[in-house]
Image (cartoon, rainbow, N blue to C red; front, side, top):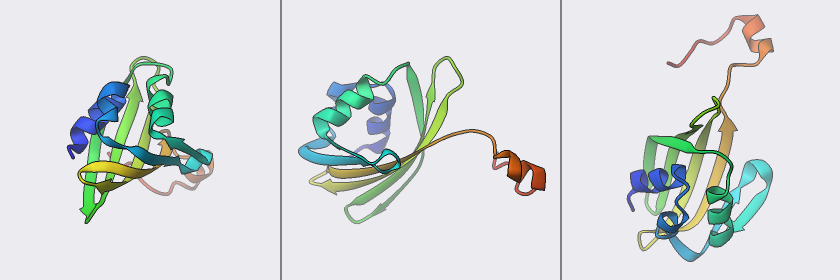
Length: 122
């Protein structure tokens, strides 16, 4: 499976191209919002999400049939940016199940800024 092509299709909201990466009976879970999707539901949620998006793959790790990726997905236009950590269980080179954890990018909360702890990663 080409993970870079998967994330490019995802950021482009290209449901037809994304579909080729999944087994037809795959299950996708978004734990942050307690949602579980079929492939078709997931493709609809992704392709109908408002706005135009770009993305970049930041990291991948593979452990047997488990592919772990971290990507940054950001809006073209208003400054909206998210990071997603994705655990994909592969079978015959296609996604059989996927667990995603999304977080909105932003500044540290004020209480940590007030404590003057931590420093910028980049």
